[in-house]
Image (tube, rainbow, N blue to C red; front, side, top):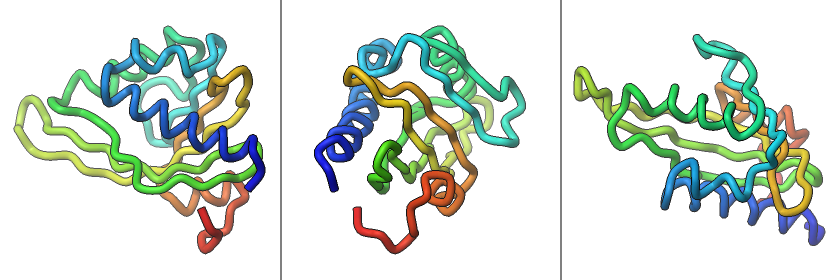
Length: 140
């Protein structure tokens, strides 16, 4: 793994740690001001979110119906100029109290100046790996 790939993986890991510690405001310094975020294909709201305000809007959409909403990073893979991430979304529905646990994939890219410039969410780890051109059996 080259140095830039290692830095990108650490940046993504740091972004999730910052989000866990302090939510949106804590992660914004690691997200480009012109970030582009592409939601899951079945997502009922916007397909794309732009900039810090878009990131805030998507986060509100994810969290407004759940208590204790968060992500657990299961795996990260360097893909050169991309990082593939296996995530476990977790929370508890506010109305019913039912727990939510769902695995999804994401591909982070357009890295620059120590920030993430693009995120694409995928309904499965396999789809995220394919989008990042990483074989499922490759080393981390």
